[in-house]
Image 1 (spheres, rainbow, N blue to C red):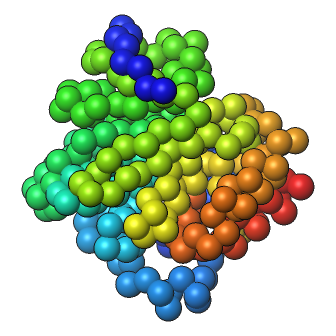
Image 2 (cartoon, rainbow, N blue to C red; image 1 turned 90 degrees about the horizontal axis):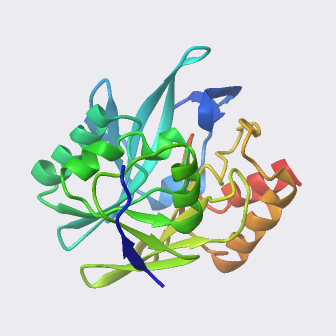
Image 3 (tube, rainbow, N blue to C red; image 1 turned 60 degrees about the vertical axis):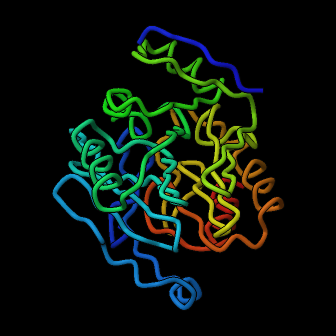
Length: 263
C-alpha cells in the first residue's frame, strides 16, 4: 500500500564497476540476438555529462558519470519509460547538472512530462540528482527500505514523497509500470522496474552486465544475490530488454551471468 509522507530533506566498451566507484574488470559485450530485434542504439542526445539512447519505442537509457578519486569517470545507467507524452524515470543521473539536462531533454525534445522518479536503491548513482527532480516538483516514489537507508545516512527531502512497500504499480498513459522488491543482492533495498508493453526490465545494480566482476560488495548480500535473480528470471523468463546499472544492456543472458557470478 502506498502512503504519502513528508520528510525533511556505454553502452560501449567501458570500465565495469558497481556502485561506490569500485574498480572491476574491463569488458565489451556483443548481443547478436538483441541487435537483430532492436533498432540501432546510437545516442540521440550526447554531452560531456549525459548520453541518452533509444532502445525500443518506449524505452530510453540515460547514461551519466560518477567521478571517483581512484578510477576517474565511470558510467552509470538509468531508464526512461515514455508513453502518451508522459515519462517515468528509474534512477537519477549522478548529479544535479546531468539531471537538469535529462529533464530538459524530456520536456523539449520528447515533448513529454516526467510524472514520477523511482530510485532502485540508496547509492549515489541512483539519487545523485535528486534535488533537481525535487526542484521541478517531480513526484518521488521510494521503496520503504530505501527510505530507511537514505534517512540513516542523513538524506533530506524538500518535498513530500510517496513510500511504497514491496510492490508499486503506476499508470503511465494507458499502460502500467511496475517496481518490485524480489530480495537482497547488491544492497538490502535493490528493486527492479518493469514495463510490460515492451517487455523491458531495469535491473539496476542488482543485475550485472555480461563480463562484469562482482564489484563493490560493501552493502551486499552475496549469499542471497543469485537466489534473488533466480526469482526475477522465473517471473520474467522471456524478457526482451534488460538494462543493468552499469554496462551494456541485453536479454536474459544478463540474468544467467549474474546468477552464475554469485552462485
